[in-house]
Length: 108
Image (tube, rainbow, N blue to C red; front, side):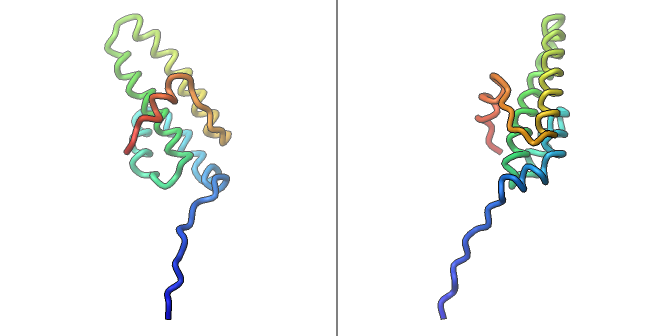
């Protein structure tokens, strides 16, 4: 008797977005991005937003050490994080300029 090969079950992209919108939004709260990157490896939507959140987190850390100009850039990073939270909560795959290009290079 031959065993029937089972095809791997791939998650429906719409289901993935609906199930992981909250985690994707939380991933823009700095260190949470790293946690979500490590925990939600099975969710492309959560990974997409967590990678962008992680890039913003690293940028914010660096900017914190640069007086005045870094602090001003931190405000820009905060605004970008808010945009990311809103887009993730709405289920959108918003690619942030420059941030998304750096985020695509992250592999965990």
